[in-house]
Length: 374
Image (cartoon, rainbow, N blue to C red; front, side, top):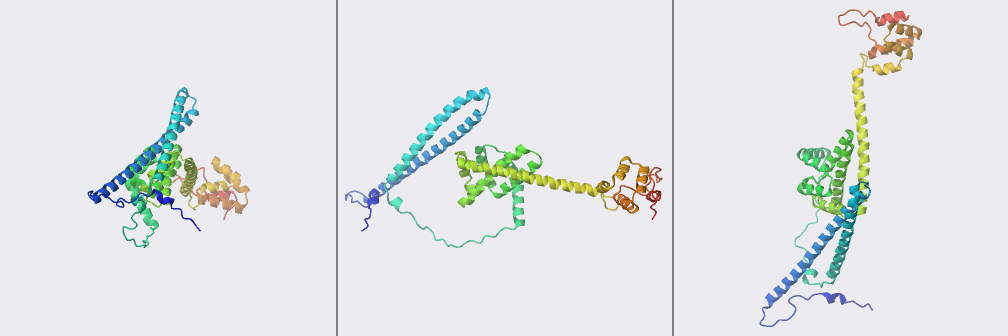
């Protein structure tokens, strides 16, 4: 036969109105006073726990900052750094002691919390205060045009604030700025910062790109945290900063890994954009060079036999006539036709005054000289 353990009920505080009172005592008032006193004790106990937790978080934050400073000083070779190193080590030792005391006090608080007797306020809580229809709201998915317009409107309104956030360096400065400008905690800010990083890398402002990249990952981590908690990003960005500042090593490593990966992606995108711009520029220049027949003089020149290239390099007509006379008639005609269509050779060329250029025979004359009369 199974034995039921009733010991759990030993720590339940009886209701305020269960025991008998003297007839001369105002029983309802006594019950109310008892209940009020118990509620006040619970509030004081919870307040104490909140203060202990706050002190513990602050102590860990200070210790993390000191340890970071200590690592920087250990790698520095200056005399000032060496002199400061011993002082920082003493400070680290003191903070570790304080951290240990804080952890001890918090453990004592937790043990005391478990020993507290249950009562009517902790056993019974309001289950339903309103009726809720379990109807899934229809969420209209935004079109690409709507998303683009939304991003454009947001950037036009908050571009200055986004750029300012992108230039911040310290955790505390970033947290305070987002507290003052909570509207920036959104997808549009993250998207703008990504584009800003690529623009800076294209402009070869590498150090500035890395700084903005850091803030981009800050915003993306906040958005991911909000998604995992299923809350509005504006309501959880403080949790991100608390976690990252308390030196959670695993979280810090994940942040740094994502940051390095993001910077590599930015460099890759910037390289592609530069290559594309160069191709567009080269194509524009090529279009400007095209001759009357639509051929590129550079491409035509590179396709000519070496003897003909030398003629154009030295601008020697006689050499050109001699080179053509030695070539196969069909091949020579093809090359000269392409030279005319690309603008390398201009038949019937005249000066601005309309006079013949004495040192530049016409195309027909070149053919006659070479024995290639049509």
